[in-house]
Length: 273
Image (cartoon, rainbow, N blue to C red; front, side, top):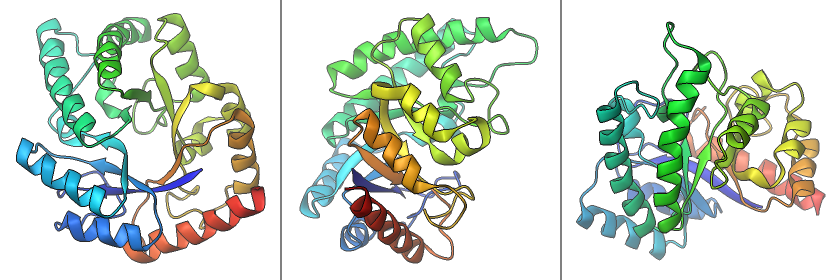
């Protein structure tokens, strides 16, 4: 498995991003020096020229874009389950443009997290998820044309009111026959929502496309109470060999957080092998 860390190309509002320096090239250099293989890249709107400059910075430092996150769209209200069809069409158009930019940066994954939209109080879960499924069915086809896997992320009930755990997400994928949709598992959310993190990992199996691996307190791995020995063993059992990305609060600071995480997980992976 490879190690990843979150980095923002701008001052994103989202909290658990480890590197948020306005000079993203400097961040990329630091990330490489700390021994990380790749990043989850949190993006704002960028011109083609800016995308090319970023691509060069990643290639020069031999750092992969493990996942491309156009979080500025969510900050602006992107909602794939929106009741208004014309609005959903506009959201699909905007996301399609970002899929192309992700492809140019070599990203192979894009998450579906808060972009799925919350369910309003006066509608059923079924109606909300049916609209979401229709949107994702179209987007998965576009994503596959860009060699990208869309990854649905189960997020805890305190942050969104649909698809909170792995079982619900797998049922959603199966019910709506979204075979091209993978799962992004986040150990912080799983610690809240899944009865057993390890059992949910085994159940998800080959649907796991990406993993966020912060500890129970949303800090670096090794800072909380998660059992990484059993978690990594479960991931290995499924055949997962992708990224373990640190999406966490940068405490006490970005470099210390990332360094602690990398040291801890390298040791655990060495023991696993």
